[in-house]
Length: 282
Image (cartoon, rainbow, N blue to C red):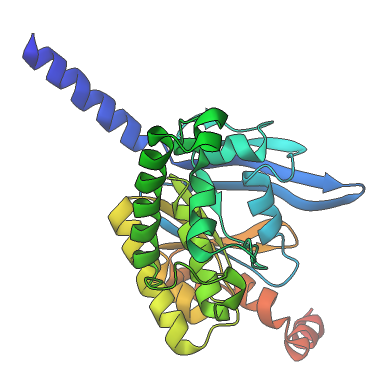
């Protein structure tokens, strides 16, 4: 009997490991006559780090907005651990296990650093309004618990000692790291990072790279990264998918993508002299 139960448990674990954390299937959205994203397909496995790159306006952030419920897809579906997320509100998608940072920093800038992180832990709180108003022992116990957890997350992103600073008073690079800590506080399964290295100097970028690798390995989460810093993308991503005008033009390892003619053309444009030679030969 025990052996049968153990075999069932092992089979269940194996089956769950084969289900992608994220699966996007023919995902797309149309605004009037414009298809911003068309036929987007992607799978991300457990603890995998995947890059999504492309020229400005390629549709990368639109994909993030679809996956987080900001936009509702006009075609296709996407799944988190096998569960369809279509039609769910952003708050429901966050509760299910998808969190993100933003291209333009969106912190609660007048709140303290630690309160920014604690604000993302509301789902963990079980006390009610009466406990909060009268500051009962239950209230203090739970507040102490999430405060300690918030401090642990701030330590991970190298913000220990800054707990009581106003978020607006942090340097730009530290505000970026605070956004990551706040996302981690939701206890997500998939983390979407939208240009996390934007505006950072090389030292800050290297520190960010170490933080991303650490949280991925420590928390066993999957990461989807949008980034224009190609050195960061090539160092950290296992696979890269390239968008141009809302469609996927390439997918593969960093080496394969870097040498793909379509990717080079999307970023650098066509060589007009080469086109003229082809036409002359024709």
